[in-house]
Image (cartoon, rainbow, N blue to C red):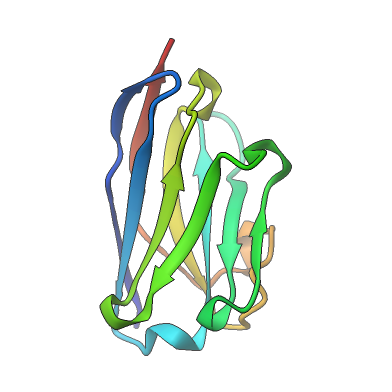
Length: 124
């Protein structure tokens, strides 16, 4: 069983930055793709970014527009989401997820394990 634990969320002013971390345990980290999703009340989970096994492919949602960077540290079994130039509309609960098919899909239902999420609030 894979356990995913996110950290790094918080309150930041518009234009600021945050780095989210997702620590994985219970399985060899490099065996699967990792994704970041976000969700606001009443809406479906929204794809943010994904990285396939050993960073072979990076993928971002259109709204990221070069502001976010996904990366991984295999030695630490951790994936990161560096978020810069944050906007109030980026406010959401951000969750990481593991995809054992190593596809890094944009569709949340194709991911196998999820973390509990971390709140990101961007004030205007």
